Every structure is written in structure tokens, then in C-alpha cells.
Amino acid sequence: MLQLFAHAQEAAPVKKEKGSFYFSWGYNRDWFSKSTLHFKNTSGNYNPVTGRYDSYDFTIYDATAKDRPGFKNLLRSDLTIPQYNYRIGYFFKKRKSIGIEINFDHVKYIMNDNQTLRVKGYIMDQQIDQDTLINPNNFLHFEHSDGANFLMLNIIKKQKFLGTKNGNQLLAGVIKIGAGAVIPRTDVTLFGQRLNNKFHVAGYCAGVEAGLRYEAFKHIYLEYTAKGSFANYTNVLVIGNGKAHHYFWCFENILVLGLQFPL
Image 1 (spheres, helix red, strand yellow):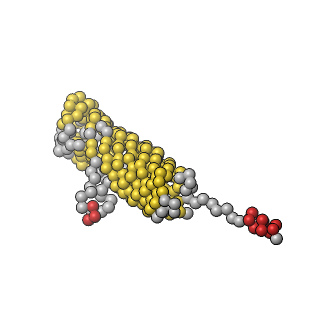
Image 2 (cartoon, helix red, strand yellow):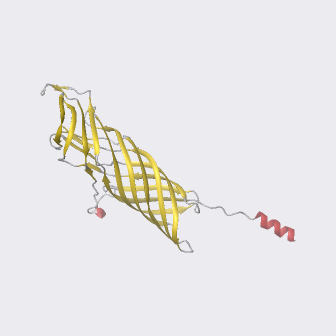
């Protein structure tokens, strides 16, 4: 009898730790470093009006930019108009709290109009090397307004700070590190011609994100993070056959609301 009882104890199944799946949606505010923009089109067509080839190869130095939050009348507008964020991820084990995450930031980069900046290169066979007013009417307006769009694959670590015994309330710190692609849709007006181009992979990005995560009743969470990213746009589509290249540092404040499901 004792032998049978001991055997039953040994055969009892071991409870396995489970991971959890989560997703979230939220919004951001952004700040950008100065950026140097290089515009190039060496296959321009001959323009009989000007008697020149519409080619160019010039650089604009130290341009400033801002974001465009779009939070006015938020409840009465499309939720995708403002600057938004979403995350989809999986924590492998609850105790270790290590996870992997797909992280998308719809960031809007709007180059400030009417800056006076150094421009160097040539435009339509004319050399230029001088401080120039960046006027949107007859020179340049440039924005990634349908998104500068950072798509990253992140490794995430969650560290518990405070929590109730039943696990219904939890405050934790999170840190994420990742890299991926930039997928902008660029709205550019150059020499009076406007082009709101298609979404496309235009370069790469990398970032580090850290903040706090509050979990309620094991399924709902609110997460606030600060994020620093480097974005390098190597292949921005502009007028005609032209391309632009620029890079910048971006700082984001991000607040998201999410759901998580133990598996």
C-alpha cells in the first residue's frame, strides 16, 4: 500500500511555467536632432524653358524638425491620424520575464519651413554654396507625415518592483532594445513640384526603450516609456528619379494601454 502511494506521488505531473502573449496601442510625442539632407538626381530631363537639365545634387546642413501630434478632437477622428504606437509580444516565462516584441512607432517628422541653412552642391547646372532660405513655395518642403515609421524587433526584460500576493496588481520596470527598418511615406515639394510618395523600406533604425509597466488583474496593463532611436533614411523617394538621404536621433515619450493573455 505504501509502495503504491509513493509511486502515485512520483507520477504526479509537474506544473510547467507558462508564458504570456500581449498587445497594446498608444500614442507618442517626439523630439528630433538636427539632420543633414542630401538630395540627388543626376538623370534629369532637359527643360526647354530654362535651357537646362533638371538635375541636382545638393546638401542641406543642420535642418531642424518637429512632430505633429494630431491629438485635437481625438475621440472624433480616425485613431490612426495622430502619432500612434503598437506592440505585439510574448514573455517566454513569467518568473524570468524575458520576452520578444514587434514594436511599431508611427512617428511624424516635419522639417521646419523658412529656416536659413547652408546649402552646398548644384541645382540645374548652377553651383550653390551659401546660406539659403528653405522656402516651401519655390524651394523645398519635406516631411515624413504619413509616418517616419520605425518597425523594430525588440528583446524585452521585465523586472518586478511591487505587487500584491494574489498577483492582481503589479508594478514593474521594463527595458527594450531592438533594431529594424524605417518605412516612410514622404511628402516632399521640391522646386514647386509636390510628391506624396508610396510607403517603402527606406533604411534602418535601432533603439533603446525603458519605463514602467502597471498590470491589473493579470490581463490589463498600462505602460509608459521613454525611447531613444537612431533612424537612417538611405533611400527616400523624391521628385522624378531623385533620391534623398538623411539621418537623425529621435526621443519619444510613449504611453500605451494593452491586454495580455497567459498561454
